[in-house]
Length: 69
Image (cartoon, rainbow, N blue to C red):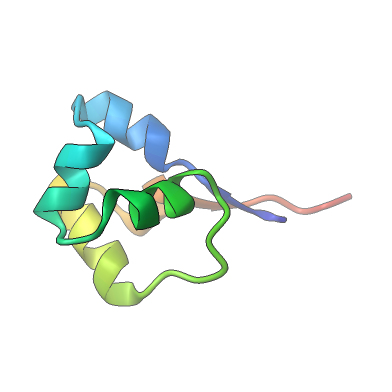
């Protein structure tokens, strides 16, 4: 898939655990894990906004496009 999720990188930079971030953005750890591992098929803007607010980052810090080819 050409969309790469760099949530784990940003979480490491901010020194925040998956459980802590999930609690802060009111998402289950299981659903946040699905997003973090790149297995999610979609992400709501409200979820992306909450993640960016908590991690003090931009959407482009979390999501990246890479061409296949």
